[in-house]
Amino acid sequence: MDINSVVAKGYSLGMVQEKPEIIELAKFIDSLSPKNVMEIGTKLGGTFEILCNIASGKKISIDLPGGVHGGWITKNHPYMGDVYKVRNEYFKNTHKHTHTITGDSHKLSTLRQVLDILQDEQIDFLFIDGDHTLEGVTKDYEMYKHLVKPGGWVAFHDINDTEHHRSLNVYVGKFWKNLKGVKKEFNLHKHWAGIGAIQV
Image (cartoon, rainbow, N blue to C red):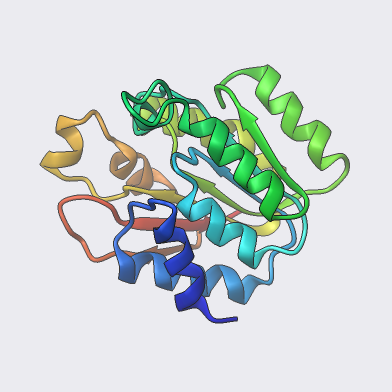
């Protein structure tokens, strides 16, 4: 697989990532040969596009239009309108076995939708990039980590603990530091971004 082309496609949808970080993460995901993948916090769909091009099975997106971190651009945009509707239609028409859930990942009704999609299957790779508050990222991890197969991976965006992040109420870095286990980082250690993955 040409990872550079896959990542370039993600950027064409409006992805906001540090390029060296997302390229290395994409290479890592590809090395796992994942079947089922899921993303919490899809925004414009760039990283979900990468997951869809790598995974062979079910691809699940959970996104809350108008959400606190990034969701503003997908709902009632002043000149683009409800971008999330166009995004969801794109994935429905472009990739097989794709499921886009529009709603709050912290609600039990959303978890039930994911369970209905998975049936008796598990997730190989989960990317959490939704609510970046300490409470929000903790809840996403605790609610969905049990859906990941033993030996599978959960990754997080914005793990750098910086003044810039804290000014935006982004505390994924604090959460990441407290996680114990087999971990990998794809991180330029800039004032934002940083990706970390932990095996479950």
